[in-house]
Image (tube, rainbow, N blue to C red; front, side):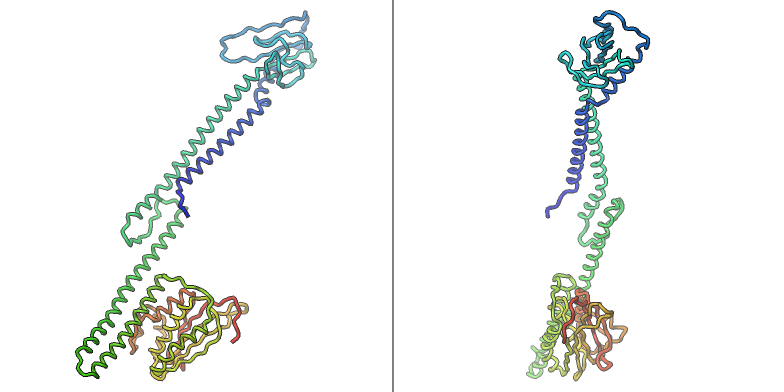
Length: 463
């Protein structure tokens, strides 16, 4: 998925919000313009008409002939467009009007209230008011073009003000966002200039608290990387130490075989060379398996596998070894299914069997069992166990947990091992969410190792 710039998205959002707000303001202004017939201009006209009407004395007598009314004085330098008003008596005599007012009534129908009229080919906005007797009528008006121009002027001022405020608000938002992201950019620059394998936790000072969970997650990953690399360093050091001994033995036995003149001595040296070579081969295989599992280079293929079939297959591989080394291998298997990686479960079982065979004396016994364990409570999913037990020397209870650590060897063990096999068992069990249990082995002697795998929802099959 293509990455997107946070700044670019922020700018787009700000521009979008400003455009949306400006559109809303423009729509509101246009709506106000379209409703100018009921605008404040009507209130102004009504106020002037009412004030003119109440200034006329109640006992005035408007007697006289009909004719042109009184024209008020004109102020040519007033600097504004004055209102036009007319005072009519009996709806047929114009007794007073302002300069520029038409001779015809502004409201020909003399109906009280606001109205738009066409008088002498000009559009007017008029308010007409009559006294209680209905004889005197005051009509106040203004050209519709003047009203519209005033409304457009006010609308332009409103749009300009709204635009300025929106632009200022957008700029403030952008400036605040840039200031907030400044510590993030500084943190990124510091990370780019770090030395290789520097896993010091990232500082949280100055960062917005919303980013703290993200940085905490980074620090958690950095700690994991630091631990993994430190573990690999230890592994490489321990592996080099473990390989140095068999390689030196190989070289020594090869030199003995080359210098031997007696065929029997040469054959004895070659047999020892073969034993050391086999041990070195197994050690190398275990080291590679351990490195692969610990590094997570291979994700386990958790498919359903029949554990009993796998146990029988691996046991066949050890039948010849058990016969040659005078050990007896017994099976007590029941059909059971687990979700797991067949190859890795095979490695786990082979290491358990190899460990049991090596540490069991001649004539000893090794038992492999697997099956379903009864559920701890009614309705619970049954678990699956794989168990390897022997009747050898065994391991003290205080030391049983430590034997699953890399390159650990139980004290006082006469047989020299690599100390890797059981650590492989622990790593594979962990990747399968399985638990390991240890106890005394067969006949109250030896060692028993049980690996308990999580159960499946399906019911166990009949044996």
